[in-house]
Length: 346
Ligand code: C2O
Image 1 (cartoon, protein in one colour):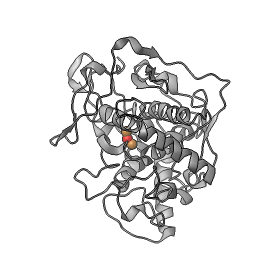
Image 2 (spheres, rainbow, N blue to C red):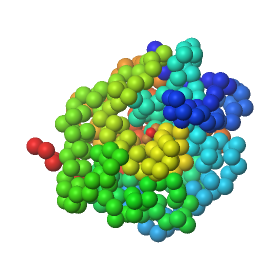
Image 3 (cartoon, rainbow, N blue to C red):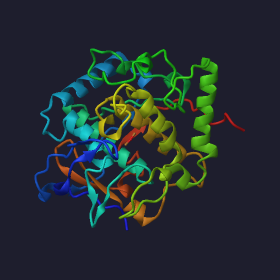
Image 4 (cartoon, protein in one colour):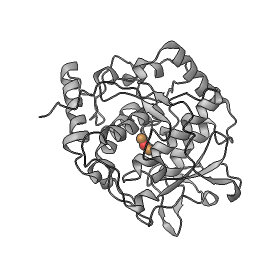
């Protein structure tokens, strides 16, 4: 059976680590009557084109900053507030929910085939809330183009301490945009020449997207069905690396749990999280263009898996994986840029 959406009335404390402290990150919830089923946006809406973060202009930055600022200033109990949006990740990833009918098993949206669809839907609502706050129905999140040399650093728009896009709880060394991102980073800076770094990053991307992702389970991760406990052996190629590595690369190693980006409970507190995940999401679209066998699963246990999110009008919406397979139907797309990793290995 497919993974069921959580029962929000049974949300409990979330664990920062398996043995460590717990935190409270449950959403405000007013009872089951206001749950509605997901509907695709009207096809008459203008397409939202998500830009590469290093290519945006001043006008875009101002708009994006204003939207995040407005989201930050909503009251903490508003489900559209920045705090609540960050807590969505904590609740779904640090064990705040049990699976319905399996009180022993927590709901975990990483380490399996639900990783891509869960995060796609999460960003979809986050983006629409921002657009609504600035009254711009075309507003689109930027993506961190880490798969291409000009994106292999922390995007400069996030590094101005006076900007609402800034988060002080990051690795200070990596917050200098001239410091290169190592997509395979493992908690130690090994500085090599830019040419070497680019080469190893592009080779990793080629392995994760092309040569090492020929089968669905290799790319998406392994099946997770109702009652299953997720284990990190189930991760798909991109989720494992560079997705995880970039989380830890961005977080502050001096914090107990590599906050903010380096732990699921706190990752959503950094605005860069949504930019990172936009590129992860972009990889799903790109992967499907790389060959005839690179298609979505057809197993109903995947298609019918469901989650709930608050939308831009504070409705609680029940969404299924099958609702989100085609980003164009969700009315967004990605700015086209070169894909230098396509042919690095022959
Ligand atoms: Cu839900 Cu990047 O992790």
